[in-house]
Length: 302
Image (cartoon, rainbow, N blue to C red; front, side, top):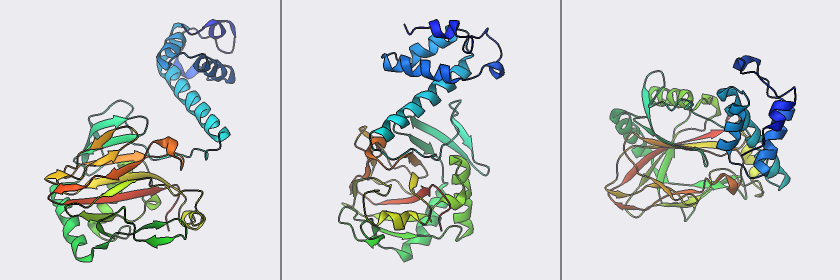
């Protein structure tokens, strides 16, 4: 079991089962947590040691989570990775079945911590899905991807779909959906790119890729001037294909089935493969696939 001697003997760490408000997360406590992790103790064991020493469970859990995350971030930076930044995050602390988004209640169907993936049900109504398709269809063109070597756009053989962009708040429908997303993910509307609608015919796909902009590419500095790095993605399914078309995460062997009205969200705190957010749109085998994608930036997107 993890050593608890420091928790009891150091006066700055010792508690007497006082209220959570009186329990202070000190540098000594953070150092003790890191030492336990380095010694190979799993988080549940360390948490139990803290509870046994008199720590309020909520305070102990917060201290453990924050300390270990900060420690991992420090190690990542030491290894040459970019520093982590804040990311969008739905409020799921108490494992809610539904999230209130103001005008709409959204179901939580799946939540994965690492990588951060959340699948939502009923984010869009059938009527909203149909309206987005109808508004987008006349304006479809071959989908482009961001050209990180130049900062412009280009046709990418890995992406065989047609698409278009709505400007932020372009229509009342777009504004309503964007407000819902902002509330769901706790991220400002102005930090989002315009909503993109994509159409995949049979055989069309988007091979696995990352949504962040590669810091090593020469065009990235000009791209991130508009709002910083991308830090989160929300893919909303506007219809249900007959076969195929799932959103795949190869690093963790997860595939999200495309179901009309549902959505998958994932975030990436640094532009690096360690986030395990490699993902793709599997080929459509039968039928067609319509999705709407919302990319979220660090800052206001202009």
